[in-house]
Image 1 (tube, one colour):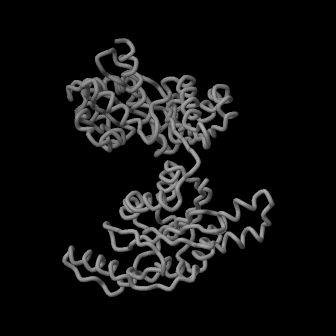
Image 2 (cartoon, rainbow, N blue to C red):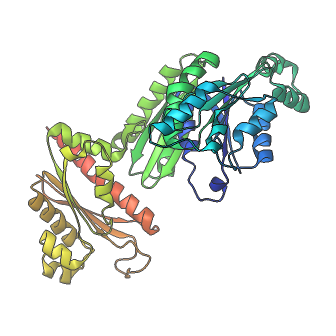
Image 3 (tube, helix red, strand yellow):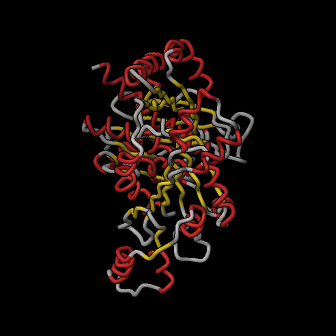
Length: 444
């Protein structure tokens, strides 16, 4: 098993000024490749903090990936500090310098003198090209890995571990990758992956899959899977759960001989136990599934939103190719807009209120009629934190689906903060349509 630790540099990450997407993206990609990410550390742009984190990681891991701090400004000190930690003098690389100059020339600018520091490469490092920016990535082999040897001496390796410790202490790798995602992600796929397959190949079999579910809470999913997955757990399949707004991911992984077959068996057990609650696998989103179901049938969709404020249309149109299916959307936040844009009857608003089954039904039917779409979804509810009543507390929502079959309206209670309320409501609306499409297919 090849173990990996990630060290993310950037004071802005610790201040909460920026979201660390690298932690998620790199862990996912490395896991897909069969590597075992065992720890992540975030440190400020300070020499001592960076060196301490990398030295400690080298004491445990076969591969240490460091992100950020390769820019030209005074707080970008990763390159210099790692070179110092490893005792590697920095030398200017003519090829990297030519890339820097060409990068600026292609944009009609001359290279600022300070950027020349990015052409400095630690002795013995492999340069990872960066066609999307100025800072190259750097790969350094640490052989012998004195940091691992020191760690082993401190904790005391047992005789049974001596062979493994000796093999790993022989060498590890450090990767320095740029901070901007638009540079890091292509570099990883185009340069890092081929390098890792060459210098740190995964020798033990690994398999994994993530099944995406909707409509059940995390505890309910685990309870329903306890029995069906017991056998597979005994066979070494690891099971993990990750809950999001209205969604739960079920992660299945295994290593060693027969890993693929064991994961496939566990996956089948999950699908059989949860049925239509499983809407996809991998990174597929609920909106992708819904749009593909509609596209495959040559059917179309419109939406009418109140409490979700355009969020439903936003999620749908985030999917490439949505225009083949999604025709139109209305955000009718006021009662007047519901009447003027969708044809909701004023009497229904007066008698039942904007948050009601009757109004949700008329919103969906009005949107479908005006867009001339196969289906239309409508949402109306109370997002809060104010506006609730004893009969309709904050979190109350009605979701309607109009289509060839009689209009369907569901009533849900989502007592969350505004953002979560909207996210869950949108998910419930998409799932209402997905299940209706599946039922229609089964009835054919």
